[in-house]
Amino acid sequence: MITSRNNQQARHVKRLLSDAGYRRREQLFAIEGARLCADAALSGVKIRSLLYTPQAESAYPAQIALLKEKSESYLEISPEVSKSIGDTQSPQGVFCVCDLLDNRHGLDKILGNKHPAVGYLALENIQDPSNLGAIVRTAEALGISGLLLSEGCCDIYNPKVLRGSMGGVFRLPFYFVGNMADAVQGLVGSGISCFAAVVGDGAVPVTKLEFPPGCVCVIGNEGSGLLPKTVSACSGKITIPMLGKAESLNAAMAAGIIMWEMARAVIRT
Image 1 (cartoon, helix red, strand yellow):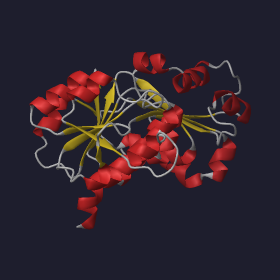
Image 2 (cartoon, one colour; image 1 turned 60 degrees about the vertical axis):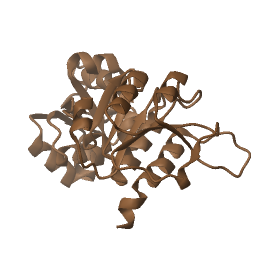
Image 3 (cartoon, one colour; image 1 turned 180 degrees about the horizontal axis):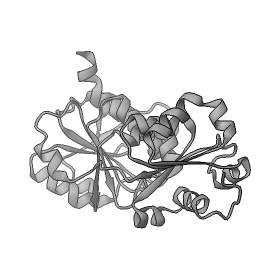
């Protein structure tokens, strides 16, 4: 059993949970929580190691048994070590170290997908991990074909993103596009409709637009919205009609409404 907070493996897990740069260098990420770790195992995520407390094995016997079967190695840790590692207020005492996912795709995959079920959501500079996690969860639930992320978005392996997505990060395709305006320009040039989500500004209400199959809707930063050059690169502008006095919606809420409108035609069938 690992009983020291300074144990090398314990410190490794803690740093994977807290440091995006370290995750990229090591090509690994960490997951916390019995349910989320088990979801990763069932989703085919490659698990390098499992750390768990005896109390966690008693509380979550089925999940720990599954994780032991799927992990390359496993070790017990003390509750004190669990608290020092954990990213949550009350850690469950279950941690997994995993290989980075192979769900990073290029735009050529979108161009080659002639019959997407719904369409794609693009996110420019979404920095709140709770927002990104909620968007991922909703996108998976509504059958969105994938998410495009600009270089200014937060890390999909951030613990808050993983928890908020309820495992959606493990299964949804991601397209890391760098500069969003350039990516949109390339998509529009290839015949794919891209719609910029804006507040008013002569945009078409989402309730009045028939979203074409395979289209891309672009959501901007929580505070400043989309960059002007990204809006200009899009083939059209959309907006969510609002009756109240608020000027705009939370990014995750706006994304959810737009994704629902994108999926409505498919859901009706």
